[in-house]
Image (cartoon, rainbow, N blue to C red; front, side, top):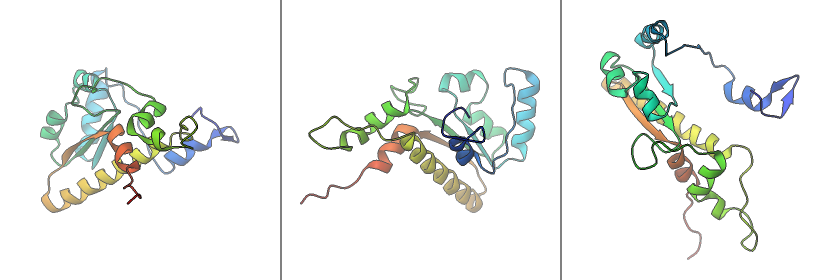
Length: 169
């Protein structure tokens, strides 16, 4: 909400990324917030969260437990490096994720330093991939009747989207 460019005092990037969304603010530290979340999940199709794995556990949002109570739910966990593996607790910036994905290596003129992609292009691309994964899970739920957990790594989403087959012979 605070990143430029602005028009009439509003962030255009925020407006673009959040057009048509509805939101609710819940204090998951309080029992009333957790109870309200349970009420919302009873009729929800999708829950998307981006807590660190340890924080998710602390807030009683373990995917297995949530899906046991709400088996229809598509539960998407988005984090920089996914919920498993050696980097699971690491936090990264857009630039670091772009560099680790290999995008910075491929950007620019070979004789000059790498270029950082503009704005949050890598994270935006990964977000589209995550949204696609959620749509596929909803389709699968339509066929099977069961929800599922999607453990989405932003780094993997960027890496996959930017991987381009070699054009050399």
